[in-house]
Image 1 (cartoon, rainbow, N blue to C red):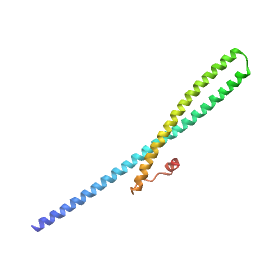
Image 2 (cartoon, helix red, strand yellow):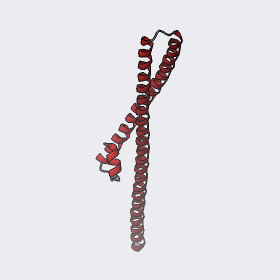
Image 3 (cartoon, rainbow, N blue to C red):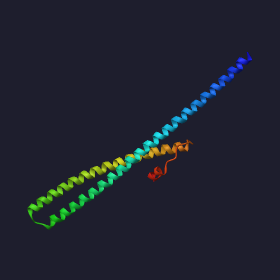
Image 4 (cartoon, rainbow, N blue to C red):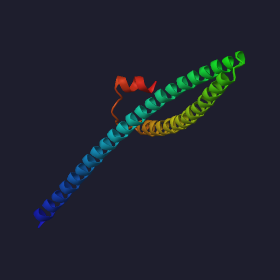
Length: 150
């Protein structure tokens, strides 16, 4: 009788240890998967941010060119008295103004998008830093990711 109860106790302890080991392994695998997904999402957001900044710079250059064209048209308007040329210049000014407003609207949308992406990146980064602060073993960023971050 003692042998049966002793073997039952040993079997129960072994099953408990096996269950704890399997549970620990599953939680570790899931945490690593979540960290990988977080890093992938962060890389995607950084790429979107870089694209938005490039688009923003391109729109700024276009706005600058339109403003220069407008300034040239205004200076020509002041220099001439020909009514036909005045009408052409006026039309060119109106077109420049419309394009300038369009580019300005796109620029404002891009800036809003950049602000949104920046806040998302900061929140993900703070979550990531909080995980590191809790002692989780997260994969370290590659030198390329570190360079993008700064």
